Image (cartoon, rainbow, N blue to C red; front, top):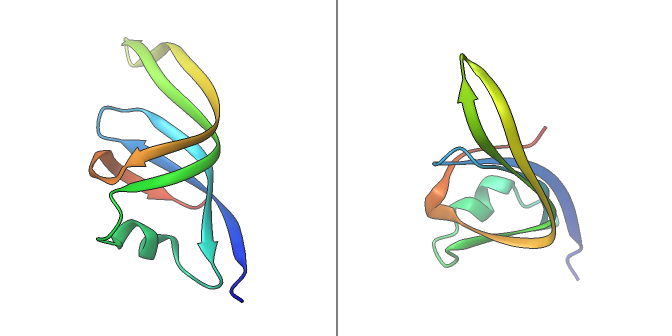
Length: 85
């Protein structure tokens, strides 16, 4: 039986939203394999922190909205950037 592992990732979406959370990977599967899987249109993140920029003025962020979700499905088509810190 292949063991599932959780990996912590950061996602930045096209409109600037940042999502930090955990994904499940099988064995030695790479994160990019999940993103490139054409059979799935969504990535499921657990213990996700969603950060949305509210307003930027004079090159600094005025406020940001932070929301915590136990799970969130992210449409792969909106992913601009992804990393494993």
